[in-house]
Amino acid sequence: MDLPENTSSTTRPLVMITGASAGIGAEIARIFSKAGYPLLLLARRDSKLHELGLPNTVCCSADVRDREAVLRAIGEGEKRFGPIDLLVNNAGISRLARLDDQDPEQWQDLIDINVLGVLNCMHSILPAMKARRHGTIVNISSIAGRKVYPFHDVYGGTKHFVHAVSEGVRGASAEYNVRVMTVSPGITKSEIDKTITDPAAFAVWSKDRDHMDGGIDAIHVANTILFAYQLPQSVNLQEMTLTATAQSY
Image (cartoon, rainbow, N blue to C red; front, side, top):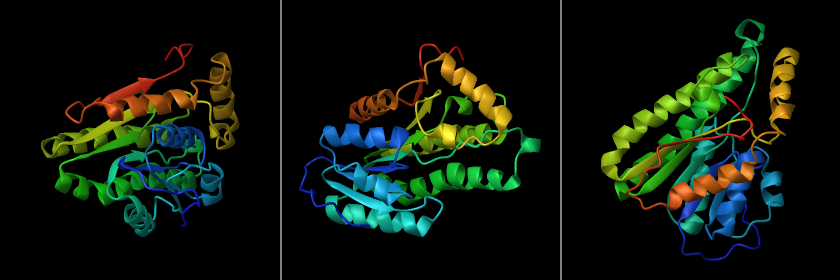
């Protein structure tokens, strides 16, 4: 949990990104760094965070399932750069399978990371944002949080949860001038193929992926989040769904 040598002062507010070591999270980090924001990056693989080589960045090895680890990371980031103004809840896993074919341990992993991890981070950040009457939370969900697809039984359930809790917290936070946004990407070019161990699920998913040339590039998701965040605080782009044009669902 150390600071890269290239840290320096910045006037922009601090942005916290979970699951920032690869894929969408890493692209969000790059885009916001390029725009001049200081970053607090969390991932279980902190070596990957350091490899990004971004300035004004605190890199923390933290598992979002561990609330105390999340709080320690927040303390490190805010000690260096001041209060967090944007939380991007990106950490998540994808374990695709039919419910009755899936190892219950995978259910637990999905719930612990995709549900409890989101709650831990929101709970750790939200009170201070409400007290300051300023802040934004972006929860990365999935198109599977809007409709359940084959082999998305439990994974889709966790992403429906993200949609539901985002909507609930958004309504409760509006009077405090705190925005909550939900981003729902479709199939995205990422490391997800390494996490699908069910052969039948992988066959269906990979066929869809190949049909759309790998899916949407993560950089487009990152740019969309930057655009939404930089809107006036009085404007809340509540929900965004992004897919490759070739994705028909």
